[in-house]
Length: 158
Ligand code: THU
Image (tube, rainbow, N blue to C red):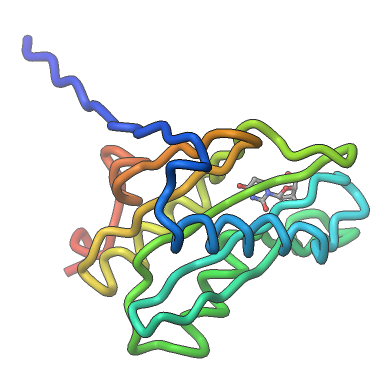
């Protein structure tokens, strides 16, 4: 018998010590929570991506009375960025959530969003840094693939 251990490194920063560009991205994700359409869960999620061309694209969760028809903030944001700037790598994504008027400590992407993050990472062959934003701290994961160990991707379909 052989045992494999998979480790995920998470760096924890206080927001004040984060680089300026991360602060800007986090601000965009927090701002985006205000425009979420979340009448069913009242859980407003915002995401913002930094692209290689320097643009920041933000998005938020969009719910639906037929629940599965809604979409998470991360996927709204990634699909929007890829639709507008297909030639620009996604370098970083910041994610924040607000419920009952208070920012959540901390939000992590659901499984489906991790799968989409992984696809984007593979598409551009470049790791996407994931910033999970809390009230005072940010938790930084170095890539989408480290958030989804033993993942399934397009290489299995070749
Ligand atoms: N949600 C996101 O937008 N991102 C996440 O990472 C977790 C969950 C949304 C989906 C739904 O609109 C609400 O939060 C409650 O699950």
